[in-house]
Amino acid sequence: NTSLHALDPEVAAAVDAELNRQQSTLEMIASENFAPVAVMEAQGSVLTNKYAEGYPGRRYYGGCEHVDVAEQIAIDRVKELFGAEYANVQPHSGASANQAALFALASPGDTILGLDLAHGGHLTHGMKINFSGKQFNVVPYHVDDAGLVDMAEVEQLAKEHRPKVIIAGWSAYPRQLDFAEFRRIADEVDAHLWVDMAHFAGLVAAGLHPNPVPYADVVTSTTHKTLGGPRGGIILARNKDFAKKLNSAVFPGFQGGPLEHVIAAKAVSFKVAASEEFKERQQRTLDGARILAERLTAADAREAGVNVLSGGTDVHLLLVDLRESELDGQQAEDRLHEVGITVNRNAVPDDPRPPMVTSGLRIGTPALATRGFTAEDFTEVADVIAETLKPSYDAEALKTRVRALADKHPLYPAL
Ligand code: PLP
Image (cartoon, helix red, strand yellow):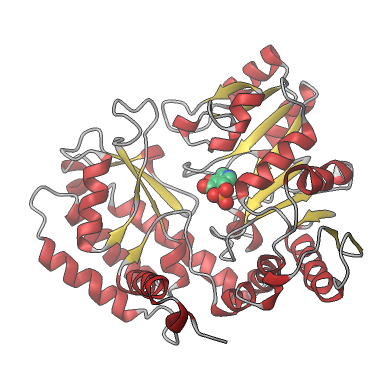
């Protein structure tokens, strides 16, 4: 019964310091969010002690009657949330979900078509040293000069290479994808369509982004980005055609015992995601990103060499192009960190600088929206960011403005 602070003060100190960092700074990494206390309570529960290889009602261990309940609730809720007939809530992460999805839909050596990592795709969509790039024949597609996914190129590459799987999804892209068009192309070349909605799943759950489930053969997601739950992955499908393959790819294909404590936390987060409060929060997330994009395309920002890729956003993030700025991605990330804003540097398409430096930033609003930020707050955030990226920035004054915003919206006050 010894508490963490008593048993291990060193680790407790790191946890406390991280809580303080989250409370006192503005978190604008587009893939991050703040899980509700109830989600963390489930995740920190005794369910962590239980082995439950298999699926609800069909386990390889005894004593699974209670974790079966929690896992079945998670499955039922997520199916309802996204209108799916099939759900697997066991993947330990987004990458694990993607690995299982890819191996259920294709075999090593098959051709897959995915958005180039350097143009906003994810590692698991075919990066050279990821499992996807090592074991599959990857044909990448790209964004065009306007920063939009080039559907004409997708169609042309699909016809030329006849891929087994077409992947639609992204980690750094500020617009919506045309799922119906991806489906049409997939059908034309007899390919499976896999949508990775890890980034925008929360928007879909709130009805503020088209739902890929009716179009795709398989949909994967993380549960910790816009969806706002515990760190983890899920796999969904519109029907049960791939159910057996998907289930056996997850277990025993790639995983052993499921993380039932995380699955219980996923169940809680799916309940939250079905609420009106969640929908309102996702609307503020979108409004915040739009306000940031508008303020960062204003004349004074452009004078400082700041440009917004694709000219705006219709999701929870925007991509800042710094090729005309005196700052590179690393310097801009460091400078925002100095005033208390956390973002990540991000390559722009065909970036002249190396991946560790880059010429861009990815800025997201989910975590601040969860914190309660309104349109007015996001306007102030946008102005602080624009000021910080100017050569004449005043670090002390900007730190004070950041602190005021953080104080206005206390995070985890009871912790
Ligand atoms: N898919 C997409 C589109 C992502 O952006 C990410 C995470 O960045 C993942 C999958 C992987 O998720 P995880 O980090 O949980 O493995």
